[in-house]
Length: 77
Image 1: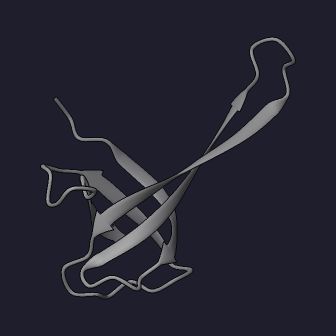
Image 2 (image 1 turned 180 degrees about the vertical axis):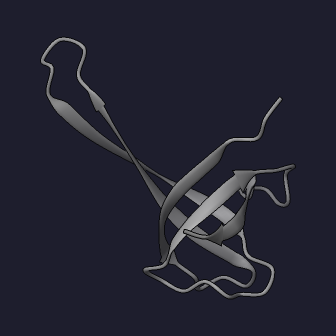
């Protein structure tokens, strides 16, 4: 099964080897036909602490690294 890859913006890099990434998705409302924006935050593993707040990054699904981390940063988009 292929791993999911999402793109988002780093909102926090305060934790060691961890970044918080805000991923936004857009879709049309089924009834109103209006474009709706929904966002979700993911905590991703950043081994070298290279990414800073405001960077646009891609994250990939991986095996659990800690209680909250299930994603790792692949590359800067």
